[in-house]
Length: 269
Length: 269
Image (cartoon, rainbow over all chains, first blue to last red; front, side, top):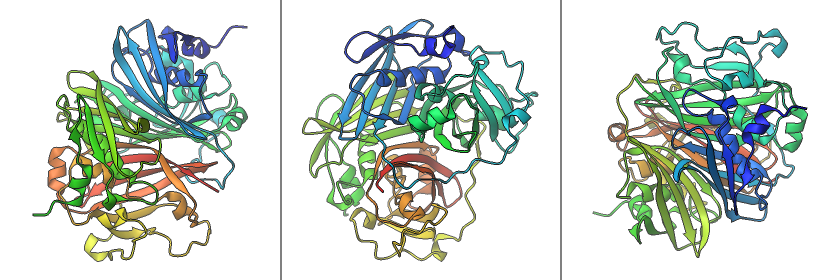
């Protein structure tokens, strides 16, 4: 059986106490450096693999300090504080002695409480009723995801006309399908193309500088979601002098909210 | 002239290379430990005061690892990566050799670009038309803010009935008024009472574990806002087994979006 490209890409090898070594993956290559979602998944993986880990991820913030060069990197994860049922992590990724990523993560043990999803999944056609997007092959990582745009797909005309909205909705999952776990859910949280291209179709240079993911899914919900599709909805709140934000929600086909995520992105022009 | 309580509270004294010493402020005291917004402002201040700082804050993530004890703390700020026009910081706050807070910050120099506010300020009555909330004196820090609730004020009846929404809108500012700066805007981003109390009025124990702030305001916009009111809007997206998220937007009276912010909060029951 051939391993999924994701498993190979996210792989880390122990290299000391709380230190791992990984390498960038050509399969998840981007315009410059690797797909940020994969880099974020590798950073989280350093905690997931750590022998002192307590519970599951609740929050992850990843700061992209520099574009990674092709090849090896080290990632260090340090449990800064361990409480009875929660744990705070500080993570750093380096290449050639230079910091390329900083991150913090919050892990915890969950307990059953009153619960409610307040942001409901919008009404959209089922995945099978939405055509699969073809021909997105400008960058390699995009081929690792199956995408079916319901609204706001990648512009076909880069005419620079203000669209009045930056909202996109799509069904998506790993390609080929792969059972969901926290690492893949991290990468899936970053599949949305930059909102500035959606709002004003111009191929301006962009780069995510910081991304935060809140995991509402636990192990049982990951398992229940399996290889099913996720509905992603994403929209910017402000574009202002070189930086914009984008927020997103990820639901499974049953309409359960798995992730809410936010990022701030550098842009030119 | 008497200094504003905020200035006294946020004050840090140099204690080595990239190390500062501060103390918790009784004026900003909370149920257990200090108001998280003040702690976040103190963490940011360690970077604002740092001689190697480049530009202004764009993103800040603060992780509350433990309730601070009354008294002194140290805060360390390290520039993990400095690029041509951007800078990534790693911050840690300690008391008695234990980590009580971890944080990361992204600073940058802005340049004029095409800009747009996509999340518009909702239509609400002007501040003068909304009564000032009186009698919120359960905790000290609340008295440091003037609040005028437009929608979703603190429950008067703690009946546990599901309200169907967790949305709150209010006009607010420092009390007494104080010209806005990045430190005070950080604290103002955390004034919203926990969404679980709004959605289901029960005084369950809560505690913010991680908060992220995206600053869309630059120095000029802070100056233009001055001592004016901010309109805050906040709402949860999911309450799930011990943790919920809440997002918020802060506009000035002119309707300019200054901040978008998100936090994940622990809750019981």
